[in-house]
Image (tube, rainbow, N blue to C red; front, side, top):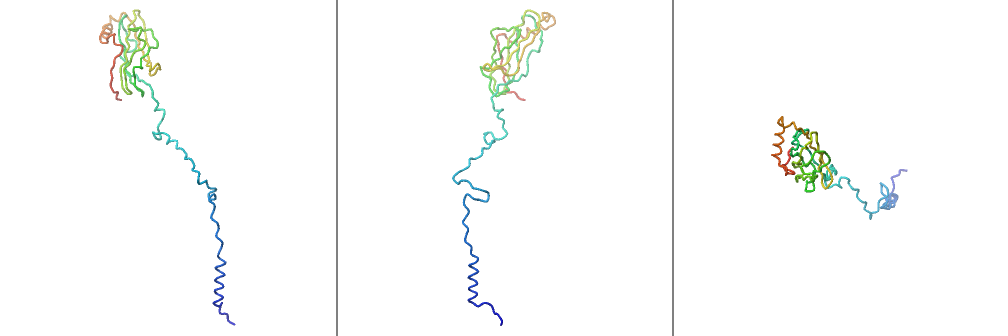
Length: 214
């Protein structure tokens, strides 16, 4: 007997059975606290941002904060009398030092040239602090001190240093002379007298301001 396949009613029953067998109950959606990467965070909690160490500087990265600290500084440039200059006893003269304000703070009336030590007499023993030019940062000026050579022959020195409001800064400067009564016989006496005439003794400091160009 030859089988010709299921009848029309049988086909409908098979179709209903196939569709019924392939239907599975839908799985509930994963909870908000369970993700592929692990437990989730509370949606109501916002984590605090991590501060950027470079963003904390208003100048941006690469800026050294030590360079922003105000400083008092000075740079010695030149002088008028070399060490061991020979002068006659009792010669009145003025020693000057050309200096640059190499710091970041202006030199004011509180900035002085202060005596440190030495055996060279001053023209005025009361002037142990000498005013200096009022220099802006980068400017150059001349700081001067009036001296008088002792009557006794020998070597004499006087050491000074800048100070601002009592705090010393910058290099130490000095004047060093040799008192020699015989200097008048070899022409040095005329040179010292000319120096005293060009630099009046009542001038305690002189100013020679200009913008220093490197």
